[in-house]
Structures are given as structure tokens and as C-alpha cells.
Image 1 (spheres, helix red, strand yellow):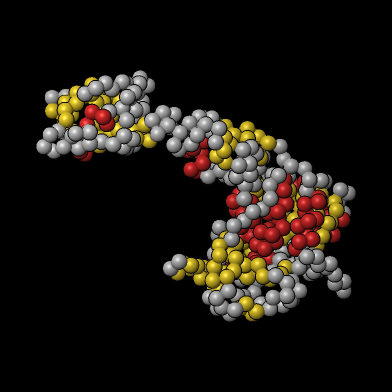
Image 2: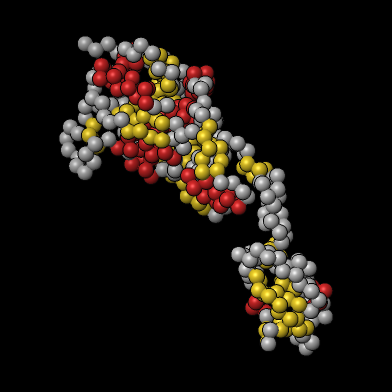
Length: 412
């Protein structure tokens, strides 16, 4: 007869505090070239090295001129200016516009000296190298002033910011060829179970494609880590202990999937105890789903035990594993939830002393978002697929009324 395992459930807040206490060593900072920097977390504040633009530049294709020369221009009395040159963004020579002169200019080109306005090409008539101006051009018209976009020394991006595509464009323009970024944690993904298979093209009795490993690997990649798939380990305590120990030698962090509950073949906690440098920190968190999630330190590396049912796997990763991975990068999880209006009354499931996590479908309606709870057993994989994200309801909340404003955390 198998002896039932007794979990010591702790609050989510206590679990997060224990992670913070045990994950102290931050991975080293790297110099990353700009072409390789997409998705990386900055380890430095970014200030501009230059004014952007460097000098006044043209906002339109047209003719750069002195506005004082055309103050009296009208359709009946056009002012003629001699077109003395052409400039393009690649032109390094700074032209000079004198009285009665104009310069053809294209968007992004450096403004000639003395010129303070542009007549758009659509409104331009040129005959015999002379421009006919039929209306006054105001000072500064169609000109982008030096430093109007970014000023030299201006703080652009803060440490901890994750670089987006548009950020890279700006960094290139303000003088950065490389940036300092936190190292990407190498996260070992270790699914456990005799029933699992890496053969994704066929579903048959007794074998389950290891889709959860694909999901967790994708989450790790999404959150700035490098997932390392370590292969399936069967339900054998010694083999599990060996796999975890090897993973700790090559990875910065370990995520096991399944084998963390109370069943006969749930061996992960026992396997940790067989490793000399293995320490189980907690096993059991007061969240539903995800209450079987555990956390350990193996050879100085953080390890998160994720339950095998899909909802629990997701919640364990989002609330526990992500926290540990961010700590390795010297960061804190700072997710921005979507504010939404609950579209129907919601009765929360037991146990009432736990935080309850409910997956939500979200639709935009006019100026607000409506959120519908998607209910079902924790093993139903289609539920998170249909969800935009999830909402965390605190302990003691039993019913939530339609129309309540809730926070929905995205899964994308």
C-alpha cells in the first residue's frame, strides 16, 4: 500500500519570498551587438550619445529656401528663386542658400545654411532652373529641428527594459553598436513519465505526445531564457535523480514537468532527497490550479517542480518558475494586466482559502474589454488555448459579480 503524501501548502506570497531568498546569484552581464539584441533585457540605462536629428533636416521633398525671400509671394506675383544645387540624405556637404536662391532637397536631408523653410515638391514649379514660389513659406515649415526627436544625454531606455524591434532602430540612430544585457538563463526542461513520447505525429493509447515540454520551452523563450530540452525521463526515482543532477551541471535552472503530485509514481521530491546537494524548499502552494508546484535548490541551481495537468503546469510556470528565472537575470516580474469588465457572474471553486486562477476569454467592445470565464477541469488543454489570459482572485473571495473590473494577465 502506497503511503499518501502530505503536502505543506504555503501562501503564494511566502513562496515568492522563499524564491527571492534562495536565488541570489545573478548571471553575468554581456556585451551584445545590436543585431543580436532583440528580446534581451538591458543591464544599463541608455542615454543618447547625439542629438537626433544631428542638424535641422527636411521633413518633405521640396525646395529649401529663406522664408524672408518669399513673404510677398502670391499666385499673381510669384517670386522666382535660382535653384543652385540638390542635396540628398547621403550628401555630407552643407550647402549655403543666399538671397534669391533655393536648393532641391529630399526627406531626411540636412538643411542648407540660412534656409529655414521648405516648399513641398507638389507645390513647386521649376522653369529654366528657377523655382516659382506662389505663396509665403513660414519659418520652420516642413523642417525637423535638430534635437527635436532626441537630445544628447537624454535618458531613452531604463535598465531592465526588454528590447523591442523599434528600440533597436533608435539605438542604431543614437550611436549604439552594442548594449549591455543580462545573460539569458539556460533553462533545462525535464518532462517525466512512462507515458510520454516525442513522436508528435501519432496519438495512440498508452502514449501521450510531450506537448507540455513544447509549451514550457516556448514560455521560457518568450520570457528571455534559453530553453534546453533534456528529453523524457521515465517514472524511476533513481533515473529522475540522475537526470536532475546532470541538468544542474549544465543549466542555470531546471524545470521538471509532472511527477510532482501525490500519486504512486510522483517521485520528483524523493529524487531530490537522493541528490547530495539537493534541498526541497517548498512543495505545495495555495493556488488552484497549481497547488502541487514545488521549488528546490540542486547544486546551487533553482529548480521548479511543475505539475503535469495543463492548467497547473501553466500556473506553476507563470507564478513560480518565471519569478525564479527573472531573479537569475537580476529582474523582477512586472506584468501589466489588461483591465476588463467581467461579463458574467462568477462563483469561484473550492478550496476557499486558496487563490483561484481562472482563464478568461477577452473581447474588445467599444471603449472597454469584456472578459468571460472559461471553466473546466485542469486537464483540458483547449481552455488556455481559447483564453486571452488569466485572472487571480484572492483568498476569501467566493463570488464575483458581473460588471466587476478585473485584471487579466496575458498568456501571449
